[in-house]
Image 1 (cartoon, helix red, strand yellow):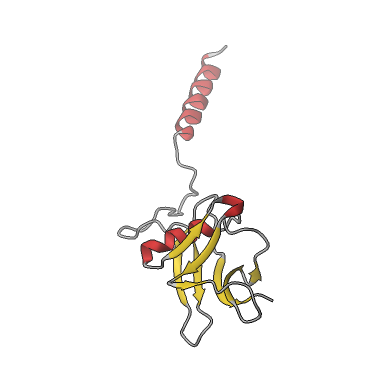
Image 2 (tube, helix red, strand yellow):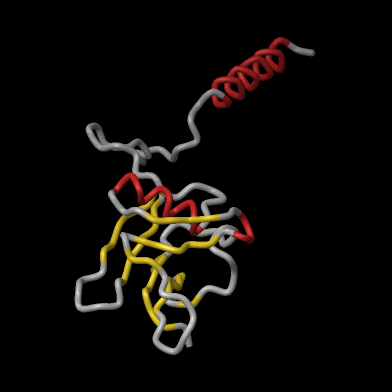
Length: 144
């Protein structure tokens, strides 16, 4: 190997090693969170519609992978929204939210029914997972 080729190889290795330690952000782009502003975790909206003339209550819930509808309700307790939940997983049952209990079966009986992005639930609240940006709404209404 000639001296010229040797130096080319040394410079190439040096540049490769130097580049490997560089951040992957494009030049001229600032991907850092601005000073004084906390990093915003993904969230979803939880709304409670009491089914009367009072305004629905909306809360922001921090999202994390695997978060279920029941988990979101439990997280809302830190924001002064109480609920009564029995069982777990497939058998989890929400019987009361914000001091309002299910009224049971019957033509006029109102109960807590949840919706995700305006679609009525098809799975139990203990197994239905949520995604960032979802709109979870519990409505106190007659099941139809």
